[in-house]
Amino acid sequence: MDKIDLRSDTVTWPTPAMREAMANAPVGDDVYGEDPTVNRLETLAAERFGKEAALLVTSGTMGNVIALLTHCGRGDEAIMGNLSHTFLHEGGNPAALGGVHSMPIPTQPDGTLALSDIEDAIRADDPHYPRTKLVALENTQGSVGGQPLPIAYIDRVGELCRQYGLALHIDGARIFNAATAVGEPVARVTQAADSVSFCLSKGLCAPIGSILVGSEAFIHQARRIRKILGGGMRQAGVIAAAGIIALEEMTERLHEDHANACRLAEGLSNIPTVEIDVSRVKTNMFFFKLREDAPISPEQLVLELAKDDILIGSPYKREFRIVTHYWIQPMHIEKVVNRMRSLLT
Image (cartoon, rainbow, N blue to C red):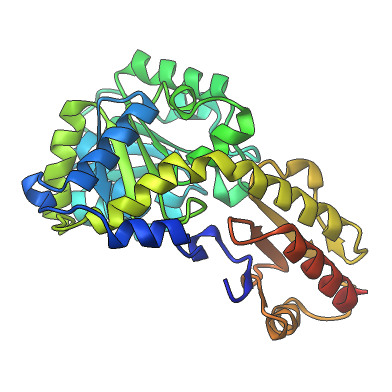
């Protein structure tokens, strides 16, 4: 990349191997089920997650809304975190597109939803209430700094869902970061879930695309909803080819991004005007806050760093999010720390 871009892992460019694979991908009409590269990607994804089937979609947002509209009907309700991406950052699409009501409950500092809060939010069988059909988790939980959910916790949520006859969906945009952090295969991390969506286009570097996995029956209905949303694609093998490399190769190197995030967080923690809890850096994402006594404002910090081709996101209440990825290397970490130290001390 031509800049040190720490705003998100969505900024990643496809690798040279991906570009070559895209140029040479065998293709067909995916709506007819005839694209061999898409079919291979979907099969690989289902096998990797230990699920029966998978569906290529254009984005994580599309994957999540398809999941919610497949699990829930009009007037049904989905329980989710009040800081979750599905609740805050997807345009209210379950309600707008499917008449599905969202029931937000508090997101805990570690990204979990308290089991007692989930259980309290489950509606009684009363015609005055929407019918509770789904619990949605996010792993890793981006709004609290990329925290991975413990497997034992996910299992307990799955047990609670089965007890009440509910489905469990995981927004796993960065699920491979979560699996890397807890040191378990992604199939084990998501074992309790009925469906999982994950992004190919974040830390895995593919230029576009997400995958939705679940049972054969679930994916059959999800494919219909994808078509309704305009998500049916034709010669999509050029997309899927990059996704195959993302799945087979890029998932195996995420520990490098986590290590770089830790290095950067530790470097910033030594700057007196920066507040950061290094112990919370578990994956490729963290937050830091600029103290009130810093010599420049948060907005000035963004502008000054950009002059050196270092990009960080706009601050919210003096707080910044930092995300490492494939294109961020140790030499970049050193440059960022040195430049921030010169600006902030």
